[in-house]
Length: 121
Image (cartoon, rainbow, N blue to C red; front, side):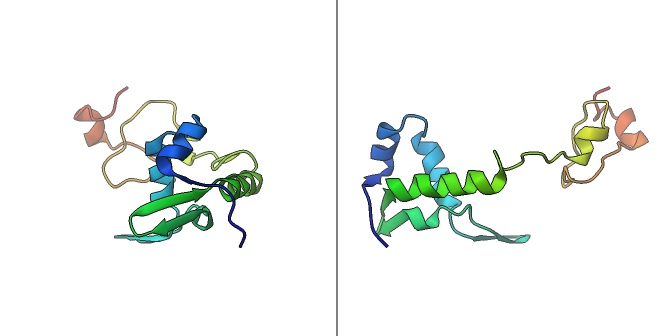
């Protein structure tokens, strides 16, 4: 693996203003698979552009943009491009989802929720 230009998170954010330090740190955190109470969450695919030496985090600039180009080509323009969530495509009203519900399910408020005004009509 050839290493190109290496930058710290601060240097990378200064070089490329489209990326804030917070956004970079979030992407770095999500770069490797991680465990949650619901199982394993897959990484975002950027782990091979990140080099960790102790607490120091370095980003290989060339590799970073190469991986982003590959990810955007795989997703054809975006992570959720072309996907519609059933809740939004069938819903004519704005409601608040109850805790624990997922957007992938079709959501219909119960009469009790309508009476309690948890659902905005």
